[in-house]
Length: 162
Image (tube, one colour):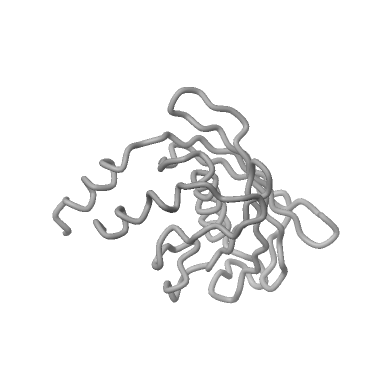
């Protein structure tokens, strides 16, 4: 955990428009390339926001042919985390709201977009959407993130595991 925290400073640096943003860490459930259960989200900076294209697979099934709502929420929550690279430091999810507008289907590629809508002190209010073929919206989301210092995560690294 300490090694991971040590690499964060470079991740929260400047990222030019159109740049692919680095994974949060190798084993991150949302974007980590080394997590066998993960989504391997690949995200780029688009202006003041972020964008990704994502296809859910059979590991994410809820009802037959349909992505489990929890898998969708996982991707959206992790996707928001890439906005933090543009904000210059870490934050944690305080509140996450997702509106499922249509079934999210296994094997279909979706476009995800997110941006910060407002800043209130340490709070970041953010919004995201996912759309499928023909720009058909399938998910709308808002969330509140609270900026924290690296010590927030260092305390977790020092906590005894159970």
